[in-house]
Image (tube, rainbow, N blue to C red; front, top):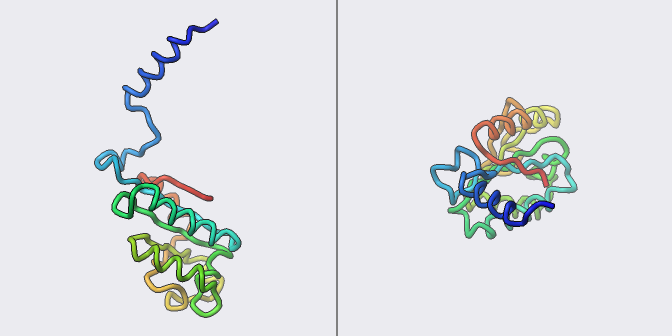
Length: 147
């Protein structure tokens, strides 16, 4: 039988060693999280945007987090100025007003024949593609979330 005190000592040792899920990039500002949210499913856009809003609230405000939403595939249709979802557009505009960055997949935009002017104002077109952008963000120390 393993002694309970051994587990407590191991827990103290691990926490004292600084082992955590935090990225090296956020080590300079341990309070500020850097997170890349990913959405490709059109039906999940509202859910993801709500998660992002709750994330900002949960960390105490936009000054404590850097969020980037990367969208591709069918989800991009929600952000089309004329055919998109007005509620999603309004919520994303509000999030962008707090500093959230919106990255739109250039591959999807070409496939849908969208121009940057066709989607939400302030969007950043990523010509290398949404999945490549997500990998780049992870290399830069962003945590990846796909709700």
